[in-house]
Length: 463
Image (tube, rainbow, N blue to C red; front, side, top):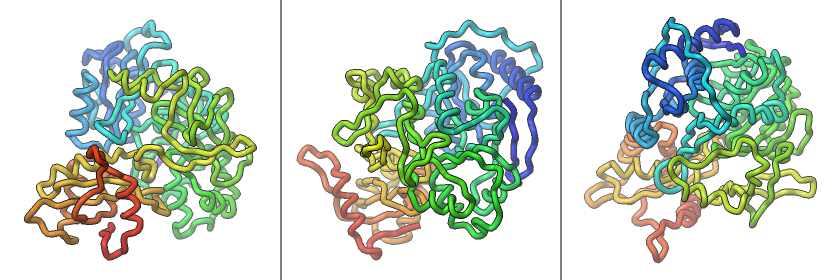
């Protein structure tokens, strides 16, 4: 594979295959000198850049287990994941990646069942769970790379997902590694107008963005002013892709954005395949060979038909057994399947919030806010948003002696941004006198959501 590293200022630098191989060998040698070997867990919280790509490739060569983490995670988040995974090393900044000019370690005698990646996923209750994937996961991703993304040898592939998420593992690194393509690694932050300019200038053949990014680009000044002739394949994943956004890209550029569906635990499950036409708003068919059924509205997948299914939750067989029953993986996502076999997303069975491509467990948001002295109790939910799919909303019950108002709301949001990753911080907040609970004390999130939707604008503080 090759890489095209783009600086925050938008300056591209070609990294040929030979240079990428040499630097990967130096990283593998440096990690080996630090004692990293087969089966060792290494936490990787590097910003998206060449060092992230080198770390992932080097750990693979050593037979180590890569634990990618979003760069936005706080020190407390990192410490918690490192302790739970027994990580032997943490790579937190680019300078942490050791490079050595010693001969690289000899190839390991690895097998497909060896552990390779530990990816944490948010849930509705308790701490995030670690989804363990084996080495077979790498080559199994060729199915979605070729049939859904439509990547060909020699393509330039730009997946904009931030480092640390399963989508960046699959579509930034592996899509290029498995096909001999060139991976675009953009180090800058998202700006809609700049993104359109970069797509024109970098000229990728394959573009993968979140639905939120497609939506925000479609609303940017200058959208549709200049053609984007290089883009042959455009795909979206991470949240539901709405029909109007698909139509805007088609009308402006002749680009047909194709939706896809998968989870951290499963890899890609369904999508509108390369060369396939499907109605805007559909998440497509199951990938070739993947068997699904809709059970009580919930999408379930035959475990034996899905080559990218994880090996199980890290040290949590009970949680694994709760979702993997009688040979079927229960996704927790509600869908409908039409007469043509197309799948249509309808929502979550549980309460995971899907915002701008991030999957956020409400318990994580609540735990962060609960550490503020003003908060007696709180409930986090997702509310519909035209740009982000959903936003994080919280209802907050204050302790005695605290006065509700915009100033306190700002303080609570600032506190959440420091107590956990900033993308989990609320974008709307409502002060309430109490929260609805069942007779056994369980929070009734559906009632919280209904009340927040029905609340007037004077009751909700938004950012």
